[in-house]
Structures are given as structure tokens and as C-alpha cells.
Amino acid sequence: MHIHRLEKIWLTFGVTMLVVFLLVLGLSAFTMGMDTPGAGHSHSIDPAKVDKTPPFDKPEIKRIGDKQYEAVMVAYAFGYSPATLEVPAGSTVRFTVTSSDVVHGFEIPGTNVNMMVLPGEINQVSHTFDKPGEYLILCNEYCGIGHQMMFTKLVVK
Ligand code: CUA
Image 1 (cartoon, rainbow, N blue to C red):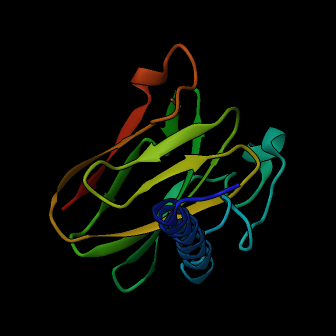
Image 2: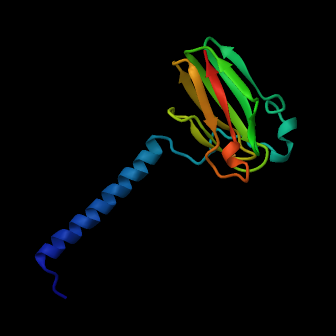
Image 3: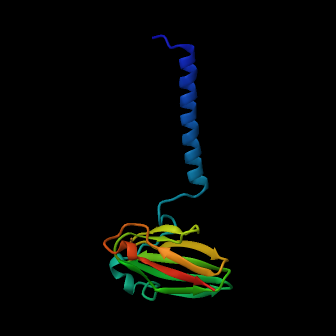
């Protein structure tokens, strides 16, 4: 079979680009530490015993250092516990969240905080809140009839 010279060039170009894209994708996944939720740093817990498993038996926001807070939260249909969160401006908050029933979301619009909350997994994300205000925390995974009512807020003073 005779392949035209231009076709050969085009085929070579196409295959080269494919290899380059796959390499870039593969390398960036490794170097940027992309991973499945919970992998590596994971501790799994029994989703049926969330209310008896520390630290989720006492959902709360607590100070863990200078301008450092940890918010231990439980997502459930349809809300978050604890219901109110408050930190001083400039605080870094580490959200440690699990779900006691189904998959929920945990998003604070306008920030990098956006994760899935999987039952039985300890899901974590940190963010520094420099600007005072009220930050909406909402569920962005459809979780049932009350999904659109599932939100809470973080007050930064
Ligand atoms: Cu929880 Cu949608």
C-alpha cells in the first residue's frame, strides 16, 4: 500500500502529539500528587458508627495553634454539624469532614475548598480566610430531596 508523503507526515504528527499529551498527563499526575480521595493519608472509619468515632463523636471547631483552627464536621442529609462556625480573620481552617449517610459535597464558593465527602472516609482540606465576612458552605453533590437546603456558613470576623 502506498502512503502519500503528506499523509505520513500527518500521521507522525498525530501519533507524536498523542504520546506527548499522555506523557504530560501521566507526569503531572505523579508530580502534583494527584490521587483518589482519601488515598495515602487515609483513615477509613465505619460510616455506621460516625457518632461514636472520635473526633466525629464531637463535631466542633477548635483552635489548634496561632491562627490555626480545625473544624471537625459531619455531613448528613441534609445539613452539617456543627451548625455554626466562627473564626477570626486571617485564620487557617483545616476542615476534617466525613458523612454519616450518603455522598455529599463540601464547597465554599470563591475559595479552593471543594471536595466530595464520602461516607467512611476522612476528607480534609485547608483554607486561609483573610477577608472578614460570611462564607457559604454548601453541598454540591445531589444527595436527596433536601439537597438544595443543605448548607451552612462560616463567619470570619
Ligand atoms: Cu448533601 Cu447534596
